[in-house]
Image (cartoon, rainbow, N blue to C red; front, side, top):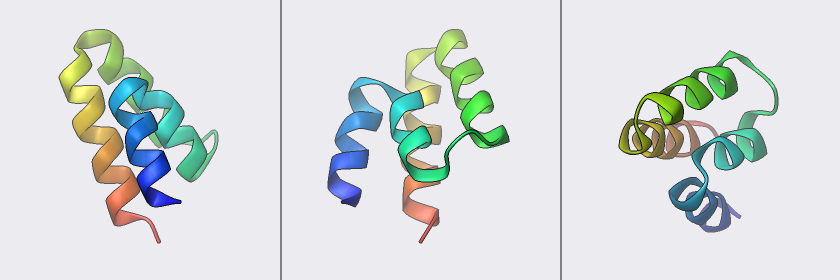
Length: 53
């Protein structure tokens, strides 16, 4: 399932984070990072998916 989340994180970073943690501060932070720059949103999303079990 992590590979699906990572693919979602590449195309739509907030979706990947939402699938991993739901509506938590990490989700809102990812939306902010994605709006400020697409690449920081991707990096944050992949990091959240990789560190969560």
